[in-house]
Amino acid sequence: MREAIREARIAKSYGEVPIGAVIVKDGEIIARGHNMREMWKDPTAHAELIAIREAARVLGGWRLTGCTLYVTLEPCPMCAGSLILSRVDNVVIGAMDAKGGAVGSVINIVEEDDFNHRPEVTTGVLAEECGIMLKEFFRELRNKRSK
Image (cartoon, rainbow, N blue to C red; front, side, top):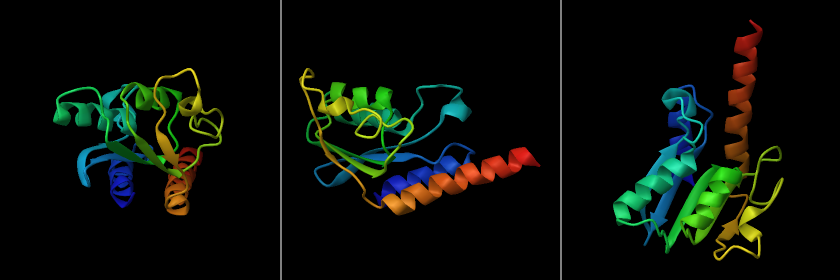
């Protein structure tokens, strides 16, 4: 999770929402991602999707079995669906997202019985640190806008 936090800090340095993700296979980080929506002008440029794309490229296929995704904020519906479709085995989440989370907060897409794959989910890993980083980012953004 510390590496995902490092990715989130990179996103923040670009003015992006500080969300970071890494994918690990066999104890090694094989992919990294951080939010790039503003810079790329791409609504799908979420940290998780960037990391998933990179992991698929590294592994030479779309099935990410044996992989664990670490992410600083609970995935949205788009990213949660991508976790199912890419066959990621484990998801480790920092802070939960009460407004848009799709892995337990608002809805829980990965627990739906009708899908043919369900990753194991661990929540609350370095949650306070991940949450504070997001709260500070949005507080700073509000302060800039009010000036």
